[in-house]
Length: 110
Image (cartoon, rainbow, N blue to C red; front, side, top):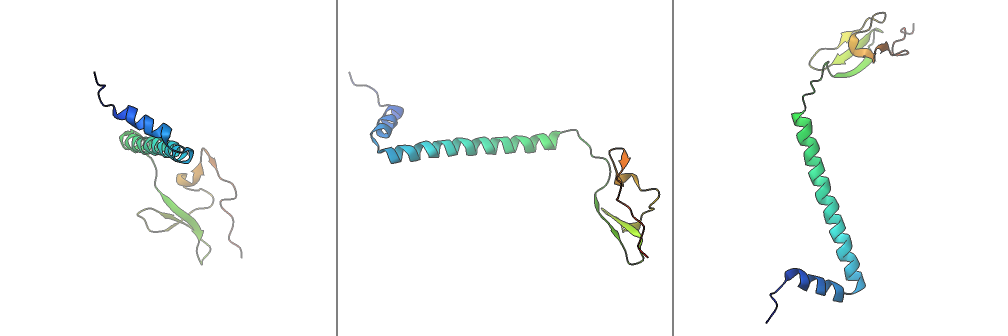
């Protein structure tokens, strides 16, 4: 009685009879494919989790703090015109983790 055809047995037989260089290339290609598929799946999962997370960000995006020609410190925020900052009482957006960042404000040079 004849054995039924097995694709995997035929593939394994061809792999074992191939030269060592071809075997090494097959092993590297299979490893690279497995790593690539894992990377794609993990990237998709992180994007799905970031979309479905319930984290709501507070605050506004600050583009920068700079000093204008008159020596005033200006803050450039998202969707607003630049506005002057009071050096003695900085806005809450510029306070980092409960403390005012020292050396963030200095007196304009005369």
